[in-house]
Image (cartoon, rainbow, N blue to C red; front, side):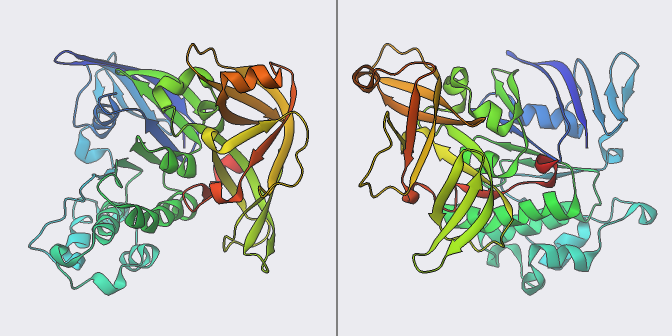
Length: 369
């Protein structure tokens, strides 16, 4: 799926001016509240007509203001999942799901009711009313309703923002299944690092209505100059890896990456499964010699590629580990004491307990190609 967006639009005192191209099945719009993420997907959905713009999905032109093209929203075949789910309270789950099919001509329907119910694991909920569902169950039903409209594109606007951590972890595998099994193009809005680094291949960072960066999630999250926008505290790098083995005696999984082997708490995935690992900068220590006698199981060798400029006590370092980027947050005093700078050989030390279920996600098929 290729998504092309080039729009300019003014909403009161807010100016939206965004241009990007994404070739991937799941594109994330990332940024702080007020960055313009929801306004942008509302333009894609046809809820807002831009002052100027062009939007193309897989060669189909939805908007081209110069040529007078503006496909009505009911003909765009776009599904929309909101933050709150927005189910009809007076209808059962079964009838909420069925509502999604009413607006799609029979000949254009590709989504089977039974297949969608099975995909989302909601067969046991069909006779319930929305008020009897948990937050995670309501969101799965909302996703199912959008899928049963047989959309060509699915928009998801902060779909997990109102859920607690447990419910988020319940939903994320289902979104991965949409991405990988249905091959349904998705535009996913979020300001949560764990969600976008787990799910997306292409990341679009928005700030004050403009595109500040666009590229692979690893490339964008590894840029030191974007820390003010991507968030310094949760900032980190993303490594591509594969499941290489399991250590049943100690409850660990060994991941093989270009940066080296990583030992993480056990994940129930077959050998060879491609995964994506998020490592926060604050969980990485540096040494100039390979350390010994440590409890930390992960020691990766590489070089300093870049140090951030900082007047305060903290410095971010971008490491090159055999072509993969890793970020570390250390003090300026440590930089001075270690005598390191760009080009210096170093060892990155990462505790295994720094990895949790939020740090690991399946790579999308498009990310592997």
